[in-house]
Image (cartoon, rainbow, N blue to C red):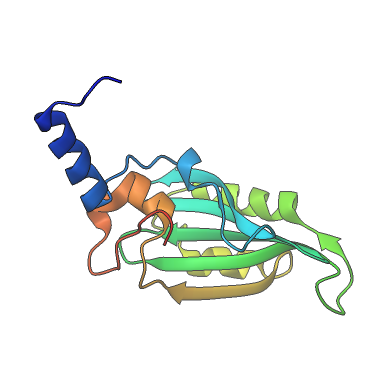
Length: 158
């Protein structure tokens, strides 16, 4: 077995100690709740904004879309599909909701505010919420880490 040089060993130890990892959007796809929930399909919407799907699949299924403006941490979350999650009827309006998002994102960003998107999604999506995040999402760390500000830095595995 080949022995590592002291220089290489020190570099590896520093890498492990700092938790430094090259994040990519595909690296943000992960299971977040044992085997029945997670994040996938991360997209760079440009100008500091990202989007992904939160999925759930245990005795019922759900799909939420999350859009985050990485700098201020403004977040829009809305449900586009659901089956057997509660007493509501099954629905899947994902394609229609994504068309609404695309209409906003292809226009001038001044007009494509999260508030306006939430209003436009009102008759299509469900459980629409606007919030401000205190923790940096993975996609923001991967693409817009320089816009983190005071948010808690994202680390894989936590």
